[in-house]
Image (cartoon, rainbow, N blue to C red; front, side, top):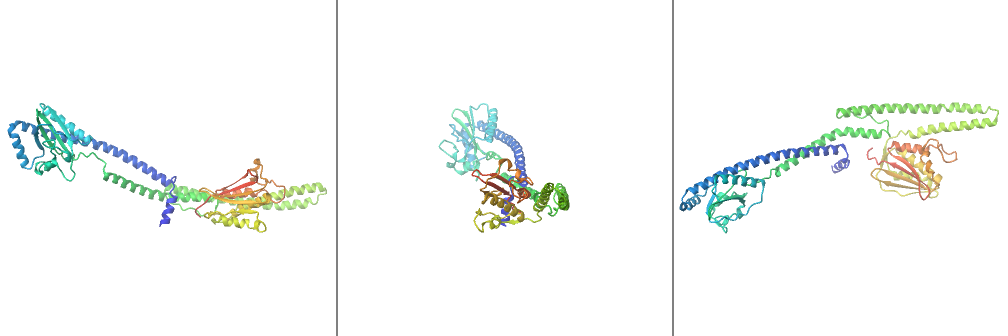
Length: 486
């Protein structure tokens, strides 16, 4: 199970269609949730401010009624009424007459607090125009002063104010209104705001909303991943088949499945592969037939050349026929060597290189190689071995000795073959890959080997590059992709 998930993570590349779709979906969800949350937050904030404004105005009207009630009582009866209210357990407000303004430790300003204070002050100023001073603020229960500046809420009997001004366990802030009716006569009113504004909490996006957004986004991304992954499978098979078609034109047709667009693309690929297979087969048969049939007239011309009386003309005629026969043999060899009907298989490059260089080192060491730890690659074994053999043979033949090394990267497995020969002129480094182009003057070869090697590597998705070393000699670099699937 762990290995399967590890392979899934390895194949989940940042630039893959699945990752891009998930990234685009996540961006769309974030933008949509952001816009929706912004609109909802603005509307909720507006409604909440309007609600607390109306609730505060209603409380201010009750405060003004309380002020008018106590102002209508004779001064000596005010404390009697207050004592009776306290003995009865209090009312919705705590009311007292003080000789001075009590100190209030205000809570932190918030939009809800400022809106409530503004609404209360507007009503009280309008309802009690004779008041000298009106002070409105909020205080926490543990900092609330009552009756005097040195008396706190916790110092009073619980029946006096606790039932009115506390609401366990949330302990909301307490509204404190102080109105100066006359010199050294302050009416003190403390109360709690009505629900749902009792706590003055302006957190509209709470923990529950955040968890809901995360949970819904996770479900959406997971379902999107399953859907896209299911749709991408046929596309990945199509891409793999297109990549392997260069190495195996005779692979089985792809199964047509998935979305309608993918079915159409797969069907078109199968038809294209069938047409290419027929074209290549017809071309090979035609080319092989022409090359083979040319041997008969060449042989006939040789016999007729022997009947010529002039020895000079006979030699020239035979020389032209030798060149023509060499071209025919080279053409047949080129077709035979580049058309390898073999399946892909895992290839251990270290073991293959050792098997290639072993004959050269039986009598004396002419080829050096230090193996490197690497995973087997997937390729056509005979084709890759033919490439390495050809390059090592050229290095030993023209450079007396060779040095083989392997470098592994994420993109390529690079096999480097260096020799100590004279090298190749810079303007001929690409020309040697052309058919029948030879630098040596001997008769061993047709000038097709390097071209065949490059064609084989191109069929594997790789390449062959040669250049001159600064210290002298030639370097051939074989690039093979480290294919991970058979």
